[in-house]
Length: 126
Image (tube, rainbow, N blue to C red; front, side):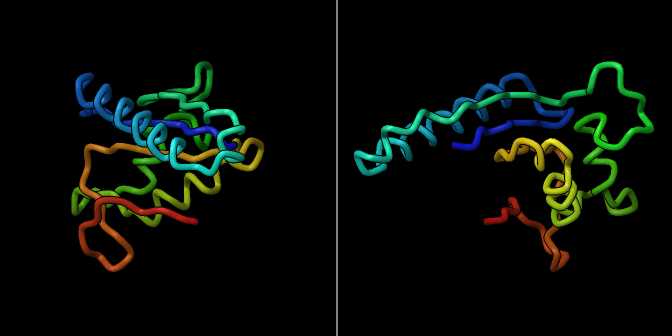
């Protein structure tokens, strides 16, 4: 089973981060309880809250050195939002996603705009 990496941007309060991590954990527990009996033999997926992380010792000019890097690359500064498709593409292309595939869930403080230019709650890939 793939693990879940939880990240959140600057501007998310500690209380919001706690609710976010707790809600993901609870949702996974509910989903896990609905698996057929054979499915329950799988280990419960690991959930790792990373928050707004920075790779220790990495220079800011290196790709993927912090969670803020993703947001900066996906931002439309003139309009004040994140381009959701670009944000997702960056996550899909990250080096450790290829090395150790996992699910990424991110809570961002900035508004997200979908590929159609309209506000969106989120974006996912199957």
